[in-house]
Structure formats: structure tokens, C-alpha cells
Length: 377
Ligand code: BGC
Image 1 (cartoon, rainbow, N blue to C red):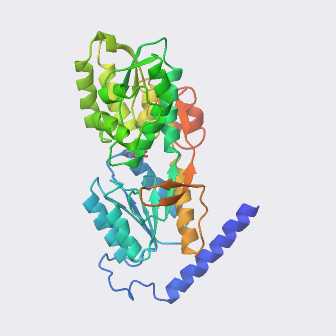
Image 2: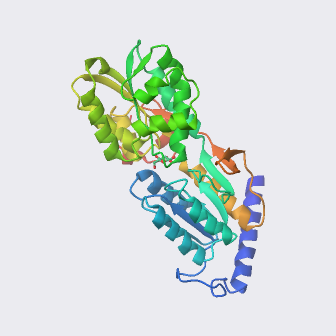
Image 3: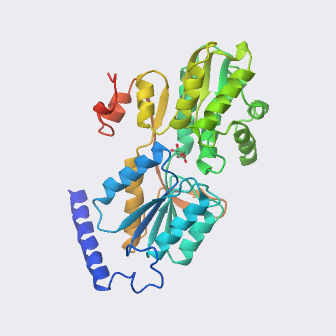
């Protein structure tokens, strides 16, 4: 009831704001630059790339949510380029945005883009990926990324049999702060099981050298990531996995465990492990609950994924944007140190999904439709 009333009053406020903006002539004509064309935009959204289903998913969920707002919005993709990202931000600034929601391609390089947004008094919300080493970030909406890594690691432990299980480690791109958090979360859970001999590391001398270190520093993480990064690129992941399997002896094959950082890289790595005759079984992690990986889980080609409900992240980001547009302070649940400031953050939990609960979590919940998959039980 209260919720309905709040929604209703929000709607009234939105309508009033729209009227005032309309009465003032929209602002874009009065502004100095409207070369971006297409008139006034209230909230600009910049996403890293269309090449990964994860971010196309976010675009779709944003579109669904935007259908319900009266504010004007525009979504632009940076296609894996920080230069393009900066250009996108400039286009949106020229359209008079008041709030920028941005998932950076490269967390450090994006500082320049958000600093120009700040100069225009725009509120900056980092979306999913933190922007680092700048004071020009106001808020951060994110999943619990340490928990993502921890869930992946726990799954490998729960599904390992006996001891001396070969463990292959892979990570995301070093330019993405999340890649550090995922690996850090995974390491905190895996490390005791590496130290006690349950797992033996197959593909990283840097990780091997740190096997008795429970908590890794940023520098130590950098060294390991430098060796096992996939750069979030399935092709790079595939090539690395091939090189690793070619480089090891039979003692590093048999039943193995693979820490893959996300679904795109997991499918590529899984295909390589599946085609190696000396690998008798592999347990492999993922994250994002991409449709293709849901199918892989149903087909027993990928063991698990970490479901991050993008609807929640989109809602948090848009609620925050609207709160700011109304002149209020958004609610946050904690903060993240980005190297320059403590950024106020709103964080969302994640869910481990494997063949046991894939239908309940991802289909019965309405996230996907049953007809999008084959062999779903
Ligand atoms: C996101 C993941 C995504 C990865 C690659 C990370 O920052 O949190 O969901 O799979 O980037 O795009």
C-alpha cells in the first residue's frame, strides 16, 4: 500500500517536473551546445560494449525500466574503447544530462570522462564497474563482487573429489576493478584448499608462489591477473586454455577444476577442456547467467553460473538518478574506496545457479522464458 502511494506521489512529482521543464523551454535551446542533436536528455547511460551479451542484457533491462519513467534518457555503447566512451559522455553532456550512469570500459581511463561530467555539475553514478582514482564519482551501484568470486570458489570446493585436484585459474581484465574483486573473493575461499593440498594449481606460477598467503595485496593480485587474465575476451580465454593444456603433463589432467571468471570466457574454456581426451571431467564456474550459458548448464557443458539480477541493478541506478533529479540524496548501503575517495554505494546480492536450481531461479522466476532453452527439466 505504502509502496503504491509512494509510486503515485513519485509520478505526480515526475509530472510536475516535466511540466516545469517544458515551460522553461527544455533547456537545450538555452544551452551553449546542443550539437549532439536530438534535444534534451535528463539521464545519460553509457555501457562498455555490445559485443558481450551481459551488456546487451543490461540495455534491454534499462529499456524495460525506462518505459516507466517520464525522464528522457539515452543509452550509448563504448565498444571497448575509452576514447569512444569519452566521446559518448561529451555527446550526452551536450544534450544537457543531469545524471550520468556509466559502466566504464577501463575503470582508470574513464576518470577523464567523468571529470568533464563533474565540471558540468552532472551527478555521476558508476554502474557495475567502479571508476578509479578520481573524486568525480558520486555513487556506485553494484553487485557484491567479492561474493561472486567466493561463490565460484565454493562451488569448485563442493564439487572436488579427493585431493590433488588440478586447478586452472582464469581472471577478467586488469583494467576492470571487478576482475580484482572476483579473483580476491575466489582466492579467499580457495587458498586454504590449495594450501592443504585439495587443489594443485596447474597454470599460474605466480599463484603457486602465493599459495600460503591468505589475503592478496593489489600488487599480488596484479601479478596473478597478469598471468591468467582473459581480458574478458572469449578468444583470448580459448587460446590460453589451449596453451595451458598443451603445456601440462598427465598429472594435471584427469578430473579438474576450472575457475572461469564469467560466462563468455567459461564457454570458450569449457569447449577446450571438453575436447581434450585426457581430461576426464571438468567442473567450471561462470557468472552472468547469459542465455547461452544457461543452455550450457542444461547440457552439462558448464557447471554453474553466478546469477546477477540485472533488473535490480537497473532499478537501483534509475531510482538513484530520479532521486537526484528531484533534488534528494539517494540511499546507499556502504561505500567503496576507489583510490581517491570513498564512493557511496548500493550493493546487491548474487545467487549460485547450477543444473539443480536453474529452472527455479531463471525460468520460474520470470527472468527468462522456458521456450528460450531446449532440454529444460
Ligand atoms: C561484469 C561482469 C562481466 C564482465 C565482462 C564485469 O565488470 O561485472 O558481469 O561479465 O565485466 O564484461
